[in-house]
Structures are given as structure tokens and as C-alpha cells.
Image 1 (cartoon, rainbow, N blue to C red):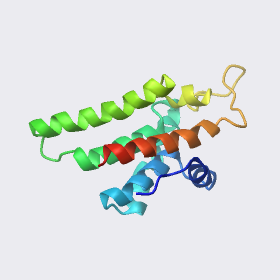
Image 2 (cartoon, one colour):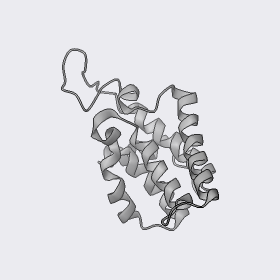
Image 3 (cartoon, rainbow, N blue to C red):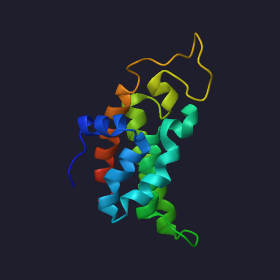
Image 4 (cartoon, rainbow, N blue to C red):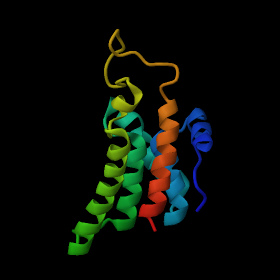
Length: 145
């Protein structure tokens, strides 16, 4: 699997993709998934589900983990252990490196609230997203092995 670079993430996001789509598209080949389908599934997760909640790059990764380690008929003991452990590893990696999982904290802007003196988007606010996509994709390469 080729590593996703920051420049590739930037190109994809500047073309209109959300961070969640960048990550799930990266994981699709490893999982044997149709890219168009998974990118549609992840489309609503960008911007912390449009409300500044958990970063879309992280939730895109969680979708991929759910596909690989999830279940459909109630979890076996192994499934009930492996998936939560993988999700925790991804989330803890981001918290350890950034102190948060929340889009609004990464951006310094809450997309779920009206713009105003205390909530104004910056021209460069998405710069952090490119690096987060790169970082989450690298971590996903480890977690999906």
C-alpha cells in the first residue's frame, strides 16, 4: 500500500473531497472495497459530521476498521475485543499527538455554530486537515495489517 502524502491529501480536499472520504478511499484498496460506494458512505462525516464533532478523518478510519473487524450478528468475544481496541488505538494516537479528536478544535472554528467574533474561519484553517489525513492514513496502514 502506497503511503498517502500531505500533498495528495491537499489535492484531494481542494478538489472537493472531505477528510473522511480521503481516508476511506485510501483504505478501500486494502479492504477490497468499491471506492465510489465507500466514499459516498463517508461523505457526511466531514467537518465532524458538519457540526465540529469528531474529525472526519478519524471517523473515516473508524468506518474502515468496522468493515475489517466488525460484525453483523452480534459480536463474538474476539470481535467485541478487537474492534474497540483498534478504534481506541487510532483515537489515542490522535489524542496523544494533538490533544483532541474534535474538528472544531483542530480548525479553531466550529462549523456547527454561526460565524461571529469568537467563531471566524481562517483562510488557512484546512491546512491542519491535510496533515491529519496523512497521519490517519499512515496509522490505518498499521491497523489494517
